[in-house]
Amino acid sequence: VQLQASGGGLVQAGGSLRLSCLDSGGALNRYLVGWFRQAPGKEREFVAAISWSGGATMYADSVTGRLTISRDNAENTVHLLMNRLKPEDTAVYYCAADSGVAWSSDLRHSRHYDYWGQGTLVTVSS
Image (cartoon, rainbow, N blue to C red):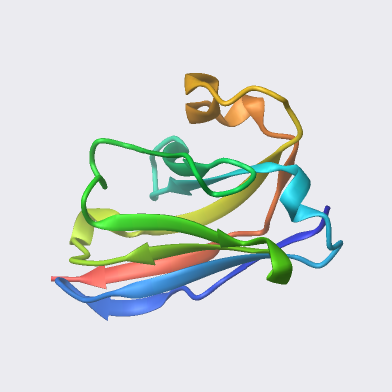
């Protein structure tokens, strides 16, 4: 698994971005995938996760209703559509893959993941 996150940038509050996480190794359909973010001076926090088929998703309370995680296994890609962005969404966003077999709340914890992408910076101006 070789994860590459992209799609970050500078956007005004209320705007939208779509992040992508590509597995250049071509096996992403075997993994649960999550997005995390880390703001300056803060710990990395969970944003969203998606099951192998995309049929199940989970979100942090702070992003529910504004962010949508999806996946295209044929393209080995997971997307994070971010709407109604707020300045507090400013962070480096990381995608991660979990080789486990259980869909559970453990996916909210970064230690549960086996592979990480390099991160993409999202900056939301007020």
